[in-house]
Length: 368
Image (cartoon, rainbow, N blue to C red; front, side, top):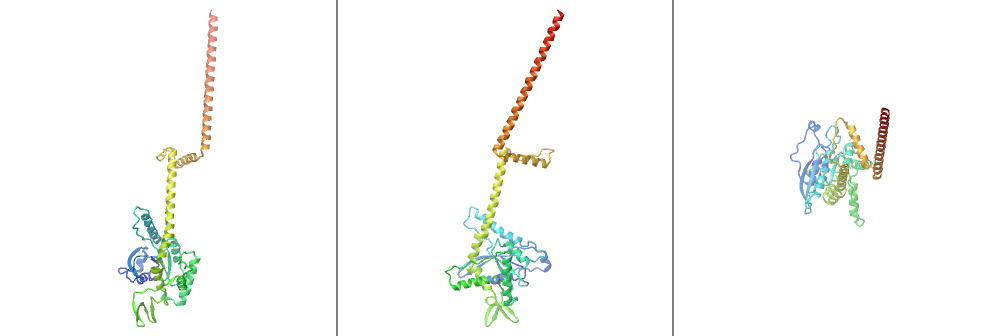
């Protein structure tokens, strides 16, 4: 993936890296059209061959990035695209047929930094901080032919200091083994010191000192693209295609994709646990359907009743047993009281009947 503002030479560098023309039908927008343009994601596939090894390479471009008046979260579409590729690979990996999975994950992101100004700009910092956990970021100092060798050196040091200051995690080259020869160790150290790569792109062939080379012709001389004394183009190309391609894929698989996969599994586990708890609560309450709201009862009262029911379900078993015993004791007390009342009423009725009998006997005696 290549990302950066328009006019920094992204398309030219891609064509220079892979000796092709991927942007034949590209239409350049004017200033008014770029104001309303949103960040797009375009994919190009190219077949390259290095020392007899054929490679199918997918190049993702981000036209419109950083061109708007308000660039707030303009990197979101780029981050969403990377997550979509992770999601697609995760689905294919979890499917039934896992033999021929097509890997469209982004293994490297070349981020182009403007040569003008003093170090990184806020947009550069925010973009790299938003994506450094998702993809291997390789910073590139664009259009290095606009700077003198001393300016290139100072700007590289400044950019590396700011990357460390803001806690940005760019791609880290693996350390050499102790048994490697000194020449290889020196080349590896030079590669690490070249960050960010100062690059120049050109598809024009010019003649310099009797040789035809790819470069840029200026009134004061010729800048050769593939001359290590002029820029870091050759180092960047070798790193991408030859020496560190497999390591870029390994870091993507073992770090960035595994982080995404672990996050997905954690989210799925939380959802399963939540669903199980909800089903368990439904079974214990004895209802398999939502509780309807009684007419005339407000939502707050319904929520209160639901909360009370939840508290009853969540109570420990011994608490529920104690409550049941209390309820049982109350019922026994009520039955005793009712029995006493019945006995008392019966006694009173019997006394009344005896009094009535005595009165009737006295009345008869008087008549006799």
